[in-house]
Image (cartoon, rainbow, N blue to C red):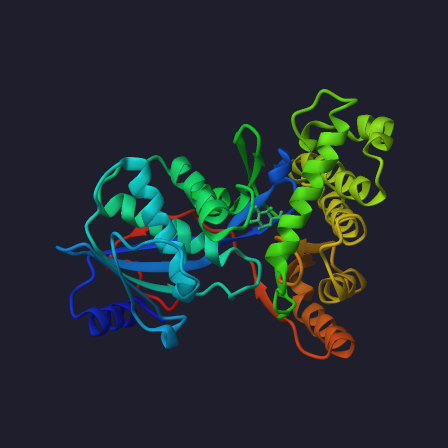
Length: 395
Ligand code: GLA
């Protein structure tokens, strides 16, 4: 869909001109999975695909939401005193959450707005389409109302939207990557201090392929919250023998010394993943900076094995895709995001990409029974405003 079509659709639905256009990307995570809410490190990057939102301020206190991705839902209309969560409001709960939180944060009465969304992130694929909607809305409203809230604060509001409004106890990674991403760079983020180091992703003849399992993520939210609770319990037990604030503060050596204090095999496995994954993530930054891509790939592979065996968030679809990638020339491959379906990523020689995708698809079809989808990942800029008129090409 190009910009002209977006504007035409906006005008047809809302019978007025859009005044502003904003974009927020999706994200991949190179390594550092399920470490953010454990006070560890993550290594994500923003993508070039994401969510576009056209906006126009209104005179009254009515908010109207429309998504080109869910035309069957049509326009959802809510007054400013009626922005609470409702399950029948579906995807519009994300922009409604951001509106409520921005209003609370700034103490301002906010005028109504017409908002028109279009996203080209594959839906439910674990590439953070929901955080992308949150940040597109937040950056948009911040500029539209001239609120002057710092981007990092918008990022934190996005996480609160998930935690307090939607009910997923997710960490800060997705919103941070989407709000603060830089084209061509991955970001090593310390999720405790929010210190971030940008590292150029220069892959020397390799490309990142995103591989979508096309599996619906069933029960993903409740299992996600369950993992988080397990980690909190493991930490609580470790704290009786180790003065640490988070699993992200525990070194592998200390963990091996005191892990029996956890006293439960499942909890030991969950904590072991968090501790070693954090360590791998720090090593991955060093490897990437040294352009030591084999080591980077090895760390990715070890990450997947740990997510499969210790954290138990992969499943047959992700495992089949990743194993097929390992067997067909990937330098490294792992699931990305929360798991339970969704996407994996693979580092693949650019000149062998076609053969790679064919072979992985064949194996996946044979073992899982339907086709995966592939996308070339290119690393783009974090959320920003676009000039209406700037976006000419198809997106
Ligand atoms: C989801 C959450 C993130 C993070 C990942 C797993 O994407 O939103 O906060 O926990 O899962 O690394």
